[in-house]
Image 1 (cartoon, rainbow, N blue to C red):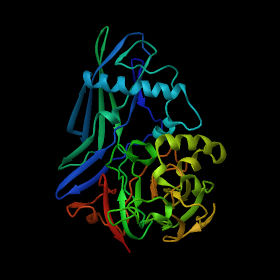
Image 2: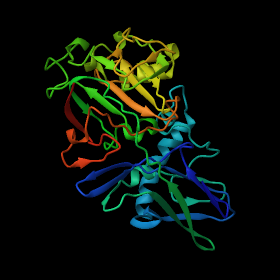
Image 3: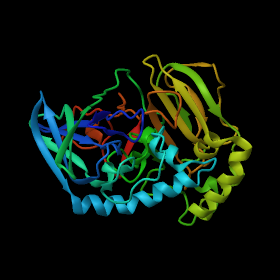
Image 4: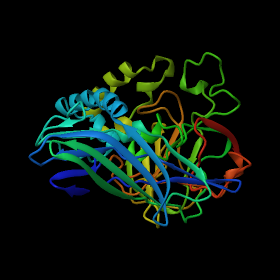
Amino acid sequence: MVSVDNIEISFFSENKKVTPLTYNIGSFLVTNIKLPDIIVINKSNVNLSLSKLTIIGLNNKQKIVCYEIYDKELKETISSVTPQINNLVRNKNIIDPLKLTFGKTKSLNSELKSNCKLEPRETLLIPLSLMLYFHYIGSKVIEDLQILFSFNTEIGQKQIKLPIELNSYKVTENYIFPMKGDLCICNLPMNIPQHRKAQSQEFAIDIVGSEFSTSLKTDPNDLSDYLIFGSNVMTIGDGTVVEIGDKFPDSEMNNPKSYSEDFFNKLSNRMVLLIGIKNTMLGNYLIIEHKSKEFSVYAHLREKSLCVKKGDKVKQGDVIAEVGNTGHSTEPHLHFQLIDSLNIFEANGLPIMFNNLPIREMNQHFSNSNSLINSDYFYVHID
């Protein structure tokens, strides 16, 4: 957070860490960053108008790349997003979409402005993650960011700098992939509209059936028609089971063809009162803490398939459950993610690589990655 002349600028998500996805293509270095969404609070006595954002990528404190976003795009995006956020704040319920997406957000004492003009004591949300896809390819990696906010005021122009320290993260544990066999890995981290839009799911993946089809039948009507349903799920590394949810019945989601957002909204409003928000959204799930203080999450598991209980010690490769279709799931699959704390809705997602899934499986020209990196899907065989 910075505060200059009573203009306060901070992340919308209070505990947000900006973690880049990095890899090499041949001799080139790639830095891919989901930019943070920003809150501006005008605590001054003058009117402000945001005219431009400048996003600067740095290496060794030297400017490497610069992007600029001008008032027209700022106004269009802010006016589109802000009414939706205000509506969610006004109409909070047990299932809070704001928390599911942004984690722990800054408390809002007034409605957000839906344009770029701020009178005293007014607040503006800048949905920067929707405005700029930061993907830099060059001879140097981006180590830090700066965002320059240009304001027009009644007494002249003002520029405020927000430095952003990047959380350059690479797992040190020798993790293994949580499943074996012929698999399709989809909704990977570079697919921005999918997992990456949610703070804790930024580097999450989904694992479904292979052979260019996720089911045994062209017109599946039952969970057992899906290739992956009931397949074993394994722990990626040694650790301790620290949380489970096992109350979501298969019968509530036994025909994926009936799935729609409206169907699940009605179901979740009923289920959350019976089994809680985590068990409703994740379905049956497990969270394992590893010695590096990383937490692996396994979600949408089959009813009555969990082989462990809270407090159990597990070894790498132990079978802990089976793939199911419980919770917010469109068809049988394993949702997997690595996070930096136990609170799955407020944690930061962490990038992960597996020692039995080399990066060349994604692209023979890729190397040195801290994360699985394709955007849509790729097929693998894991022994």
